[in-house]
Image (cartoon, rainbow, N blue to C red; front, side):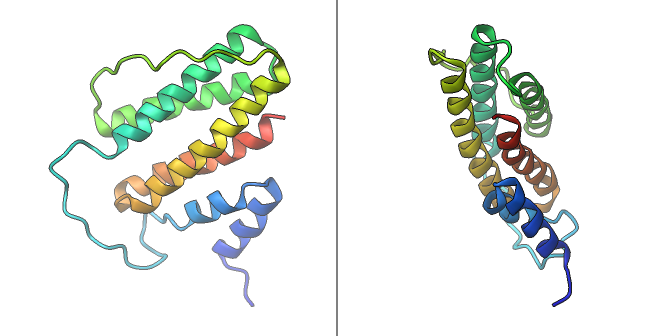
Length: 159
């Protein structure tokens, strides 16, 4: 069988440990090369990405709490910077109004427990971003696929 982009990504991402989420994200081709995407009529309600933006803000808040208590948590500062960029990109995409601050989070008692909490949050975030990518129109799919891939890669950094 010839090596396709999709097979390459699937094999590469399994090595990272987040193959399932990223394989799904790799199906989000902004140029439509992976097949026709169904056209959707715009919904009259709020932007569906507002929920993803709120979740990213909450995740950013979790990192702030963990880093305030455990500034040397492995990989947390770099990953926090990525989430700040995700919030900025999503805010620009959906033109969201200012939102209320997320509910405060209490950090676990040890660095290991804090990192485990962040890893669980990253797993959920990757699934959310992948689902959003697969449901998004082509104009948004590239950004959402990148966010989904980034969330999964964070699991490698948080050890």
